[in-house]
Amino acid sequence: MAAGLRKRGRAGPAARAVGLCGQWLRRAWQERRLLLLEPRYTLLVAACLCLAEVGITFWVIHRVAYTEIDWKAYMAEVEGVINGTYDYTQLRGDTGPLVYPAGFVYIFMGLYYATGQGTDIRMAQHIFAVLYLATLLLVFLIYHQTCKVPPFVFFFMCCASYRVHSIFVLRLFNDPVAMVLLFLSINLLLAQRWSWGCCCFSLAVSVKMNVLLFAPGLLFLLLTQFGLRGALPKLGICAVLQVVLGLPFLLENPVGYVSRSFDLGRQFLFCWTVNWRFLPEALFLHRAFHLALLTAHLTLLLLFALCRWHRTGESILSLLKDPSKRKVPPQPLTPNQIVSALFTSNFIGICFSRSLHYQFYVWYFHTLPYLLWATPARWLTHLLRLLVLGLIELSWNTYPSTSCSSGALHMCHAVILLQLWLGPQPFPKTIQYSKKAH
Image 1 (cartoon, helix red, strand yellow):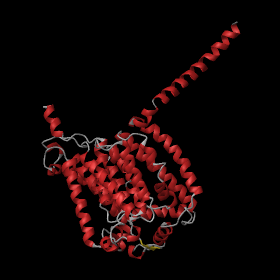
Image 2: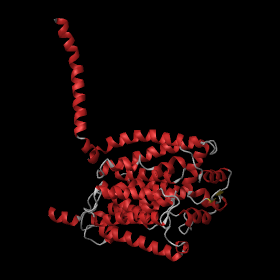
Image 3: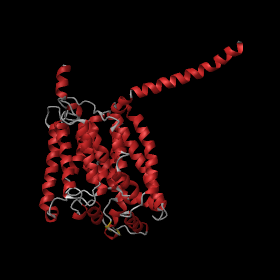
Image 4: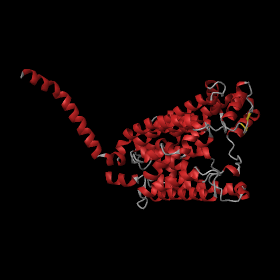
């Protein structure tokens, strides 16, 4: 009898553990709907998706054929620098002259040595796979802090996108390198590390100029938080870093470096455009069309700054004042205000871009769930938002682009812009709160 009691005693803790595990599994099953819908479960779902992405990315690398587009050109360009050429007008690759800033040169110079002078493509793919997973991690940390997007959407943001996997590990473009630095910058801004955030932002710009599409939003945030005098040192960090990185090339040929690496008037080829295929080529190339797009871009940015971001009731010029001297004391910026201004600024630039090429998809792909779910208009249901995501993905996967795919892409962009304008305000009217406080 004593032996039997001892047996039951030993089985007790194990039985309790099994019971607790069963309860946890039952509770998880009962709350499975909440697991997919509640943003507080973002990190749990993100961890599962990142594990899945390890397998998916490994499968893509080893089962899908690598396609050479720009990698050899990148390697030829940095090889010219390694051989002692610092005049940007003399640096060329198979696809044309070097048109990226100095940060690109240093990073891809490291990749040049890490991949046996660019010959070990499989090693390069694995490095970009790590870069892809790092990008996902940084993006998930942003979404965790904003706590706006239901976790089920993240499946469509990573596992389901063929084009994004292709850009990272099958094409080895420089766009993902710029974007991972940009998302690191945003995480630093969310942690209130403004100087470090500006430093990383400038590093991202030094890899590819498209990151400047986020700059209007960043400028607005800096002025809101610090005023003009407080923002100038942060802007100085961005400028000084560009000069330091580009110094060897600036000393050799300053005009050549600036005109090549920051060429705002660069002409794009019609055969590669994703967004303007339905236009005649003559109109696509016409300077008047480019000027109209720039005007629309700047006008919409100004409207968002005046009507959506600046909500204190004062003139927008009040942002130039020291925060302590404003009529309405500024409230601390929330994660959603920071992310909303940055993501919207970039998205407006995408909508009015003179041309979008296939690798440019990563410029805004990871921001789309936030733009669609963070401040949704009432008429935009979950199903409609998923439909918009699906049509955008389909448009970017149509090669070569067609009039229909380009038209669908613009239609989806218009829907997102409309709901950003009509949805709930990311920046509430602080003047109302100050009156209540009194």
